[in-house]
Length: 262
Image (cartoon, rainbow, N blue to C red):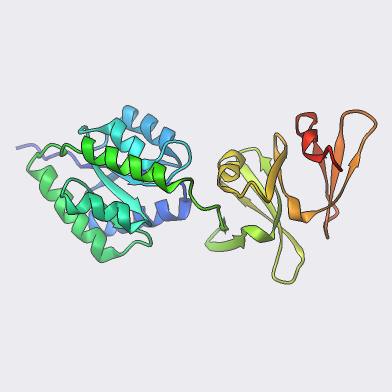
């Protein structure tokens, strides 16, 4: 008698630390489960799903680009879906009807264990994923009614085993650096500091408050409150001088309109 194949899972969340925490907790609660892919956003999740066909998808409700509900609509009944969310109202709607399961952020091992227990029973009994189309449509409508998510408040920068939480209000600018983003801010002693984060600049920009942060170059986003002054060049160019920092940031021609009334 051949052994049953290991169940396979996809995790999609735009916060790397939460993805890593879910991987660790799933390893404890469900050792047989193989996490075959991790996605940073909805579009990545769909690409991984089409390529790998996992049995279970853990989807953050609110992600940049396509959100978790849109990804679940794409998946349909081809996999079991679990919402990972900080928003209890969405989760309760889904769970109360018995169609979807959920875990809340921050992760609670006991709650995750209950979810795992139900998933294992469904997979062992070869139960198909439930019909969730109507429920997902209601959740999608609610998400749209709620409007855009609140602006990002903290940026997590990890160096080895150390994780630093950087208040977005303290950030002076962000600059794309190959596969990473350099975050420049003033620390608790008001000294200039820098750190690299894995999240691409484009994803961070989508989560920042447009009232305070502006893209001034294809690779640079600046906190408008950190600008000391802007100097215009002879041609269509400009440079940003920051408060308490020696760096001078270039302004691309396509972004000069931000400073027309300088």
